[in-house]
View 1 (cartoon, rainbow, N blue to C red):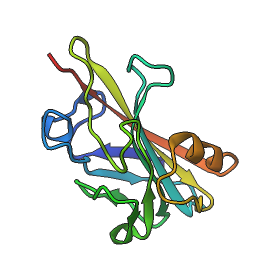
View 2 (spheres, helix red, strand yellow):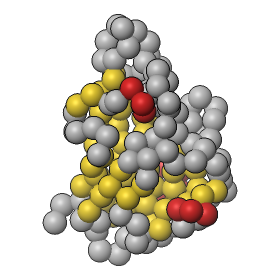
View 3 (cartoon, rainbow, N blue to C red):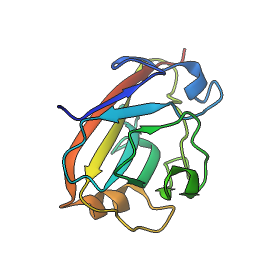
View 4 (tube, rainbow, N blue to C red):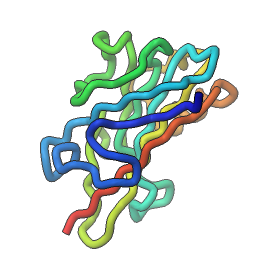
Length: 157
């Protein structure tokens, strides 16, 4: 079985509902996955916009140390560093300088693609809460068993 990531909020390569953007309630979408590789002990999620007019894109969400037994994230994950309701998962700092999810918010004019990448890991990262994407990516090196991805699209007019 392939490692897959889906959302009830939007289909792959389809429009992200306003509710999950800066033009709406700015809440994280519900995500679900299946087929995680054998030996998965933890997950890390990075959500970014590579279409942003900035080198490296724009990071909207960094979540890590989600236990490997989990198969979904609920809608509207609290914007807290440590998530006891999610098995002790931790959230990092996004490019808005905030903890947790901040939704799609591209400049007007053209659609942007928002990548949600779920990394299956052979160990928890053990990073402090509030880590940045580069810190999480460095810590994941040598521990990634698989990656599942869903892409959503949002355009402001």
